[in-house]
Length: 215
Image (cartoon, rainbow, N blue to C red; front, side):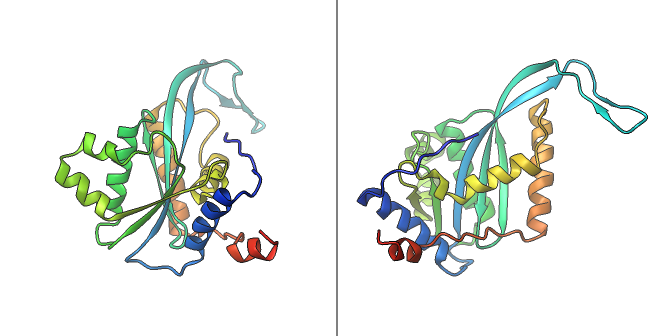
């Protein structure tokens, strides 16, 4: 679960907020996709005794469980296209983050002229990580296709990927997921179904509303 704070609408926050909102308001352009990223940990939990369903159709789940560590869920979503993908990683590090960036640019959008990348300004989100992971030529080629936009401090709620993670938690992941492989199976089934349905994000908050309220 993520918590967030609505700060006072100072100039720095409003500037960053409007920059993000203006991107959401632009028309869809397949040559210039706007892609959002957010991450969240998932606790892995196995049951000590297998659950069962009785003759009346009631499921019985043992209240004892074993913690099996955590995995990191990386939500990548293109709001205007109604597409998303969830990558399940062992850790949340700058190098794992660089792997996600490379996957998006090289595998998901190889023909795009430019990818605008919206994310939180965390210490694990560093461009230099690409140079740690790849040869300089490859790292530079990836960065040349990217435009980074960071949500303002205490403005993570402006990231559509955070909203999608909330939907995933409610709809696509069981409370008890025992292993990384099961997490991958569940999230893949969820985003494939959601993509097939063309589920887009109906983002209502706009720059015009802010200016109309006197900010």
